[in-house]
Image 1 (tube, rainbow, N blue to C red):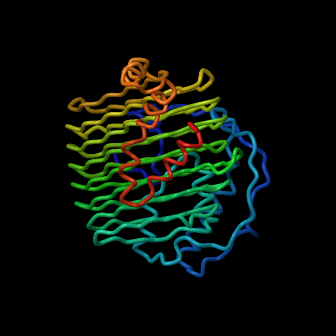
Image 2 (image 1 turned 90 degrees about the vertical axis):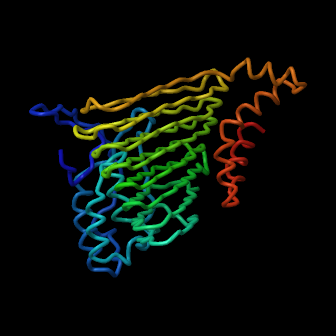
Image 3 (image 1 turned 180 degrees about the horizontal axis):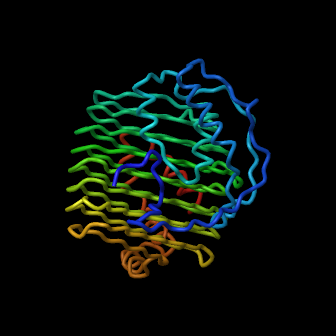
Length: 380
């Protein structure tokens, strides 16, 4: 099977069969139009953006029952910023990294109206910390060689963003996404698409905290052999936050390893919807693919919806999935109390322990306080 021009979330064809997709429900909202288009100053880029605008105008915003998204109010369009330095090589790369995302409408929205972002090429070991992300962000990264460490901090009342990354043969990519809902009515929607080649290594750590709706989509296309991809989402929900996350790994070539291991803590009336898809294409022999999700519930009103999926078209593979949710382990609480720690403090220590690895890794960027502050806001 060849890679389609637009990487779809679900493969809807198998041999001579095709799935019937029901028409999606949409929102009637005040939308942008042609007059809202702001030129970038790069004719090559603007030709591409105009094509995206034409497609954008054919869609309405989706009504997401799982998140309660029933209305949307768009902010005023800001001056364009994103991919102004795009050249012909960058354009070809951009076209090769087209994807469906959480919803095609939102991918196109960030492509056309971005007010932050960059086109970045990496050939040596590089560290980037990005915190000047605006309401719409569109970033394209080409990791040609060396190792890129990228940290993105998103803390906005309204955010829609795209991140596309190509990890070339033998390159390494480490990504930290910190999505921080700044208000009870915050809407954060992030679409990430990573394409990895032979012998590359990709590690992703995401942290979702609060907001009204905090939605993340991460797709890793493993198009090379002997590639390694390890993705670890973390989430912390309080009040009535809904965290909606989808993680997809699609294997096109043999002898690669992929893992998605999600974990988090939910308090009050918060909710997480976790969807994980491991998709192994015919011919991707000797692939190892695993996914799991574990939620710790510290409130009787907190909810978890876990939808793990394995799509396997090859026999010679190792694949697994798992999902669980539970209150704080009473055996662990009892053990800590037996060491003289009060019950409430013991419970807080266990919750903090879920995020300890992430905090330790963020220390190298002096950002461990981001997670610690979020925990203090929930646990006191």
